[in-house]
Image (cartoon, rainbow, N blue to C red; front, side):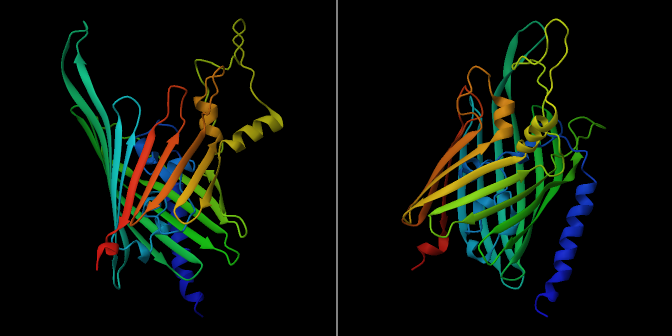
Length: 354
């Protein structure tokens, strides 16, 4: 009887997810819509483990921005600050705070700010005069509830703002997620992100699609080894994630005939399947040190320069617990020109009470 009590909640959750996701399946991949910054993480831990929704239930408040089903009572009065030193003068930052309200639920408030630096005005003759800025914002309120010892659900409600020079845009979106923890310790997670719409577009009558995406993740902390294995299937809503590069760096277009030599058969299937897969892991050294790493096949295929493969698609990070503070750092290799630096610090304010 106890389990049956939660069946209406689970049914409503999955019906809600499927209904809204079916209305936005036309959403594009890779910045062809609006607010694509919503799929960019500011968390070092998320960046080090592939940059997507993580199925890890260990009370890390930073993970809830991508997976609200992880919000729980242990995050009460937890505070987190993050910063990303991106390319050039781009800087991303976020702040998150958790609060448990009796008889209401567990909440996490988040503010994400993306600053794209300063740009110079220039007329058609190249004369430059003054500068302008560009930035994106996201303010969200997340809610999470554990239905029983195995199931938990959660949602983020987000207000989105974007300002490029004198042009601005506003929108709203929600994320919904659910997790299941098996008796053997396997954690499964399903997320549907950025379900919503643009309320005000940059230009009248020019509304764009939201960067909707769905993820399925699984993780397991091994029984006899201090290691957690993480496997993600990203972008459930779209099978073919291949990108046809017009520059043709890989030399697949015949310069004489203009005919492209495409992959086919099993090779094509394997390539398309692997573009969904993100593989990561955490290695725990004692109680205060964690090493992290991941491989993102899709990122490597899209961002690599054929004669300078380097470590594109790989990411790594480290977590250190010092007294009452958890400090995380990560580097994620997007391109041969360099890697962004991610850093965060988190603490629970209750630990300072005497």
